[in-house]
Length: 116
View 1 (tube, rainbow, N blue to C red):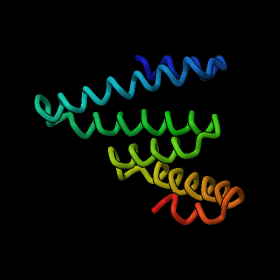
View 2: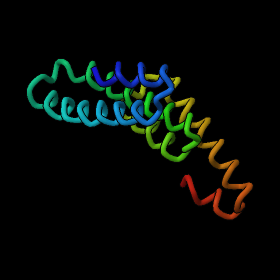
View 3: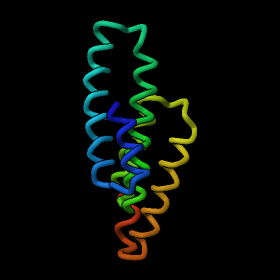
């Protein structure tokens, strides 16, 4: 439900509400994953895919706000939940490269250290 609100808010241009809703959805999904591990292991894969979708959506919102470092963290978390989604892995690499390009322009010595 919160994930749907995120998408509606985004379409309406209500960026802060969109990010708040997706963060709430991410927190809720984290709790669902913890419970699923104990109570419903047969549903764990489905819940992990949903968590990956939520993290990837949050990553895209971060990209929209030009917060590439947070976007990278979100895409990495999405890949941890579901490593079969190639689009998530491509986005992660793409924004790592974008972030490194920005860092290199600011301070060339920092770029090599940032993503080790």
